[in-house]
Structure formats: C-alpha cells, structure tokens
Length: 125
Image (tube, rainbow, N blue to C red; front, top):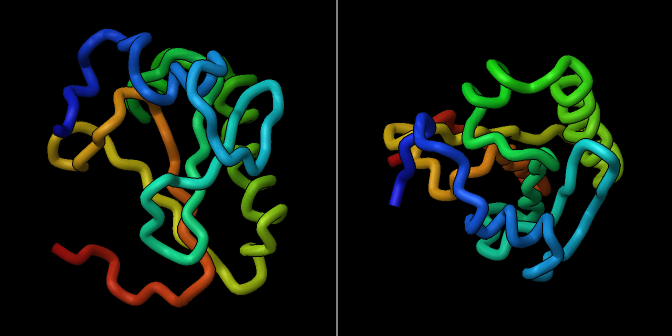
C-alpha cells in the first residue's frame, strides 16, 4: 500500500527494523550515513536498496530536514555502492519512489539501484 510522505516517521517500518538489527539483510555496504542491501524482490539482475541511517520518510522529508553532512554522505554512499558493484562503467538506473503516485511502499527514504542489464523504457505500466 503506498504511503503518505507527509505522515510522521514510523519506527516500526521494515527498514527501521533492519537498521536496529531486528531483521536481517544481505548487506552490500555500510558507513556512518547509509546502509545498502540487496532487495528481497529483485526487479533486475542487480537490485540494491540504499537507505539513510536516520528517520526520513521520503526524498522531500530528507532534503528539507537532513543536514548537509547527511545529504552529502547519502549521495556519496549511493555512488560508493555503484562503484563497489562495478556498475559505473556499464551503467545503472537509480529510482526513488515517493508517495502514492510514486508507489512508495516503505515509509523510509530509499534509493533503488538497478543494474546488470540494459534499461530502455523510462516508465512502463
């Protein structure tokens, strides 16, 4: 069910539980700002999620309330993951879903990194 990005942060969301160590993940990368792990329902040969290690519901929430260090750290973390997975040369796709129209399902900001094949269409329904 898509979520409302204007609602308060839900500490019981699945990504919050992963960050607290209550649920496992197949970790790809971690630093002080981000945790990256393989998606449990991959949509491409490589499908990794990168989440900030703080309580942000959405991209809007993050860019409005995150500190400069958090925002820079998150962006650098996403780049580090793409290089670690050796996606930087063949290329990859980044996607952020936000709110009902963006079909955001988890109320914690997350970036999808897709790779391992060519992507042609921008949007397909």
